[in-house]
Length: 440
Image (tube, rainbow, N blue to C red; front, side):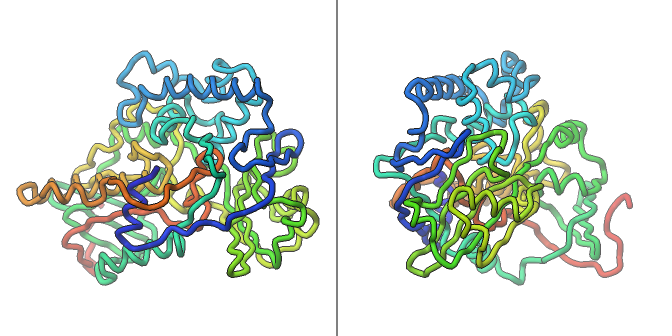
């Protein structure tokens, strides 16, 4: 359970709203469309033999991943073999059954947007460790599957953060183009303005970092890390309908696509987040980033009927895994432990520095929190109290547990979100036309 996220929401008094208690069957698309009759037995379409093989393979992965984390991935030389191996080659060596490899591959794709052919096996193992193991992704609930959503979405969370920090303390700027620093200050340049800070916390992801000039240059290890980054290949889509026509087919509206070839179309997952009480009938999901609207609607019609091609409203985010600051995948984890190393007066706290719940909202919270603690302990070590470090540490919270949907699907990556980024910048002031960037 992502306790950091839950505690933060509780502190802000933001309720977690349960999705409608969908009745009906779940569809599983794997070389044919299978109707799963039991919501707490989502893998019922598998034979007994295949299910045992899946469990055995996941157990082996979990045992290996226990010794791997993002902050010490290369310390064990015996693990280096996995850094020189792609994830799909690793699965080939581990398991013969195609259906088992396909399910694990699709699970990883749905949760991260990353393809098994793009990342190293060591990255995959570190990811499994950070998200409490691959077996956790196949969690079965005794009373069925359901999901929780943040009430009001991430916009609600962002507004609470702005209220807490104070809108007068927040400077909204265009994209950062240049960052420089020396022994006394940090210069930050955007396409229109210059800013000066005593210190800064850097929370931008790998994709954003590529477009920023640094003076002095980034260290060779940081360049190597970012040079091996890869981006997600999925986008988010949402469709609103006049009525929930899928219930006429005894379907709940959820579809899990296990077919790695995408024979029926570009959709990888579709979930029903309708609010029956408000008569809002909404399907949302992930599809390949290059897919067209008509391809997505056509695939929905295969599952639910021709009515799916005539939505009341359709929207998508072409750059879901970039614009929303999702961390990237990596071809290699060499030098990865150096990613959090400060850069002069800049604390490095990008989403990729999370070693718990990597790629999730909880991971971003953890990365930002660690960056803030590092900065505060540096600038006022004598007044930095233990209670400060416990501000957002995970504690037990008496609320209903967050049931994991199939494969532990993270709802924050479906609801339009912004990543939680904590910038702690002191003595920020604007200097008009004066150029403050050193070395420029």
